[in-house]
Amino acid sequence: MRMRTTSTPNRSDSAAFLDPLAAIVGSRHVLTTPDDMAPALTDWRGRYRGRALAVVRPGSTAEVQALVRACLAAGVPMVPQGGNTGLCGGATPDESGRALVIQLGRLNRIRSLDACNHTLVAEAGCCLAAVQAAAREAGLSFPLSLASEGSCQIGGNLSTNAGGVQVLRYGTTRDLVLGIEAVLPNGECWDGLMAVRKNNTGYDLRHLLIGAEGTLGIITAAVLKLFPEPRTRVTAWLGLASPAAATRLLERLQQRFDAHLTAFELICPRALALVRRHIGAVPPLPDAPWHVLCELGDSDVAGALQTRVEAFFPESLAAGDIAEALLARSEGQRQALWRIRENISEAQKREGVSIKHDIALPVSRVPEFLDRIGPRLQQAFAGIRYVAFGHLGDGNLHFNLSMPDAGANAALVARQTEANRIVHDLVHELGGSIAAEHGLGQLKRDEIRRYKSPVELAAMQAIKQALDPAGLMNPGKVL
Ligand SMILES: Cc1cc2nc3c(=O)[nH]c(=O)nc-3n(C[C@H](O)[C@H](O)[C@H](O)COP(=O)(O)OP(=O)(O)OC[C@H]3O[C@@H](n4cnc5c(N)ncnc54)[C@H](O)[C@@H]3O)c2cc1C
Image (cartoon, rainbow, N blue to C red; front, side):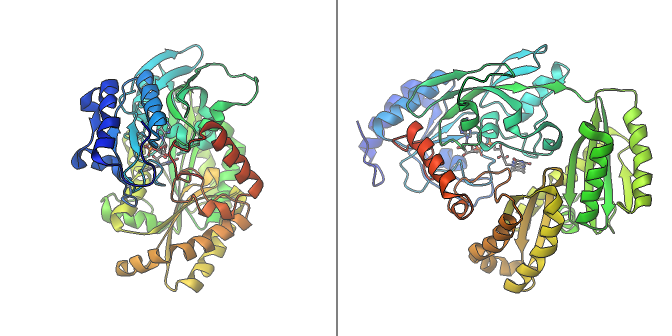
């Protein structure tokens, strides 16, 4: 049976397609009522809302494969969904009601852990926090760390090439994956679960699927790299005069501590005011013009790192790089400092609508961006304010725009295209990326065409066409 592709399917078409799906995954894993489907049909920010034929929850790779084959035969678009914490609408179906949302959450087994090889095989639906816990139980660490780690899933992390707070030391998700198992758009299962660190055997499908946002296939499992668990962590909250002082400090910390530096987060005071207002947490160093939260780690317990860091900060104070420093003296204090940082997105969400950007620049150009963007925005939107925070160690900033009067924000958002143009053009001019770690989804699908070369866009289209000629795998996202 091939379903009509231009309009909402009628009831008998739907039943003819959906009934066999119940035989594949079990009828309680085919959700069709509006209430059951609702959480899957909108994104975390509530910005996108879609409709779907059904939400299905396969429990094994074989079931995913059977679902993909059924969709292929009927011409039904598929939307893979993990924890649904993505920030670009990548996991939300469109409004046609024709798509099947395939949730991976039941594929949640840790299949194996090889402590000697420092690897773990996790199914796509494993929650990131569960993978971190499994590694910890073996005395190791899986270093991908995001504020959404209690909800997001490994399949979603791979598909968005998630970043987070430890990229500086361990790289993005792409750097943490040795192998992948995936169901391709033609319904074939590719078992690429090799746990080797060297494998030069032609095109690397793994890297095509990572960051593809579900447009080239459904990831069902992955071989993840593990690392020794840092047994000493030194965490500091610093007050600084400017972003330029922060980049100077970062450079000095890297020269002195190299790979021990695991996180370096820049935070503007407005972001902290939001956390104070909406979360109730009281950030330290209230008078500082800018803030940095940084962390260093060591697998040695002897405390040598702590002593070296304690000697370093007075030098930085004397050199004028920092104005104030607060070192966490207990694990509880450390976690309290991180909670402030990790709650910024939630606080921003509770504050109300804003225009959000997720940009990357060469680290050295971040201060220039922040110096130049303010006047440009003021010229177009008098009184506009920005909240800037993020992973300065990677040159990645979250840069959100709003008006002082919350009532004026709807009008601001209506002019989003204009605001994006100002921000993204400057990012591009400074050699940066308009989508650092959240991906394109549907949010930046059209915007990226302005900044990627036609050569690169054509190559991406050709890859999509080769792997998904029917265009059924997460259509309308990325391309
Ligand atoms: C509070 C908060 C903080 C965040 N912080 C960060 C951060 O620091 N760094 C960062 O990078 N991101 C961050 N994010 C964004 C988000 O958590 C990540 O993008 C995460 O990797 C998404 O995982 P998910 O399982 O929720 O994926 P979903 O939102 O369910 O899906 C994301 C995309 O991946 C696709 N997909 C999902 N599973 C699969 C699969 N198995 N196979 C193929 N495609 C699939 C979907 O179709 C969609 O296109 C944050 C989000 C929130 C809400």
